[in-house]
Length: 111
Image 1 (spheres, rainbow, N blue to C red):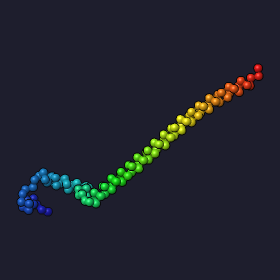
Image 2: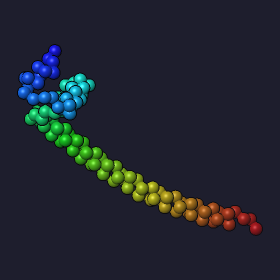
Image 3: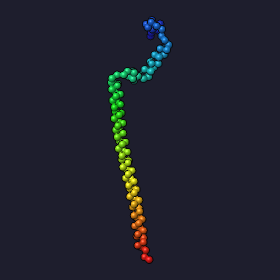
Image 4: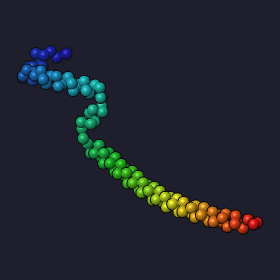
């Protein structure tokens, strides 16, 4: 191990307590995070390409999701229209059934 006096002689200056604390924190961080910390600190062309391809993939997924949501909205609108049409037809059927029932009831009276 290098003693404090030998490190002072090697650098030509005294060790600043603040710098020592920062170095200890950085060392602790490196021990906890391992190589992931080192990789995140360095920006290489391959990591930039990875980020760019990740963004492109995300955008593609978002566009596809948007298109699928549009199609779903269109299907729901058509289903709503069909439901309203069926409700109108059911009301008309009920009205005609009532008229037919009234007509038949008048004809069945024997007096």
